[in-house]
Amino acid sequence: MSGIVKTPEPPYYAVIFASERTEGDRGYGIMADKMVELAARQKGFLGVESARDDQLGITVSYWDSIESIKVWKENSAHKVAQEKGRAEWYKNFSLRVCRVERHSFFEM
Image (tube, helix red, strand yellow):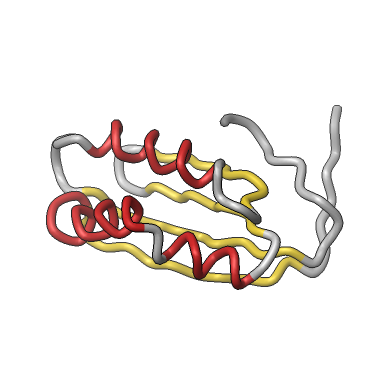
């Protein structure tokens, strides 16, 4: 998936994951792609946007409910990725869950 996600009318939820990576890939790219593919098959998934430079990465996934986010958090393959992230891939990371109350999309 690429580009700006066209989400439904609010309310819905955004999970904002910001990270600073360690040096080297060590399977990160493959796992990140796999997680997007897996999340896209989860009930309640609305889309994902992601950007990364050489210091900071930000991924925002959109969900229809808090319950869908909880199910994704507990997914066994996602748990493996979380563990590898803590052990190998991230220097620092933050996770924020937000309810989207309003949005605008402008197509030029």
